Length: 237
Image (tube, rainbow, N blue to C red; front, side):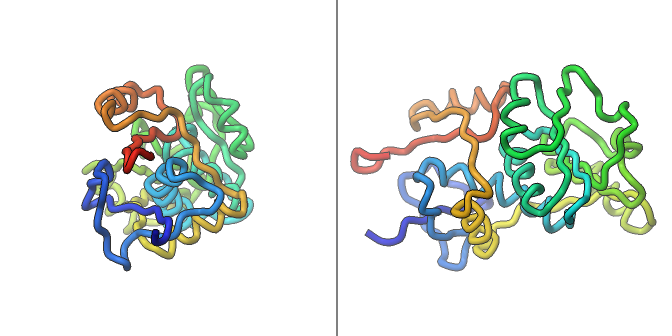
């Protein structure tokens, strides 16, 4: 039967296919023993992107204060859990209906963006992770501590320019990257999952025939965590 595996191929795409070829050296690892295939499919994209920003770009350390905008989304749900693993004080930003979810993932404080604008509160953070893409460095700058980091996971040309500009001066900076696809990082996430330190959040599951409907739901902006597309294989999913 072979190994039970999970992985990511963000450049090659093709994850809706019944079969997919990947190099042994690619972003693939044996599946966590405590997850189903569906649950495992919800891990690599969000978890590896969150790991890249929390550990690698943000260099989040024990005792640091991290604010996560979009804490209930695909990247945000993993970022909350990983930041807590690394010892950070985590503030999550989400809508009213997702407050309890974000708290259950370990956030120390949750801000309801429908009732409060964190940029107006006067609170400052060592880093702000924008996992939605609806903020900006200029808007968040006063909410960052001296030498604080703004971490946008969906950067545009503006953020790239700001990263280049701020890299030459002291003080607050913009830092961005593409999500990891390394086998080593996937193994790291796998170990955290098997140890019960990280778990996937799945909002809804759709059969492949309803893929368009699944995309419409994602585009609605109401999604929390992950959406799963199930592909039948020999009568099984």
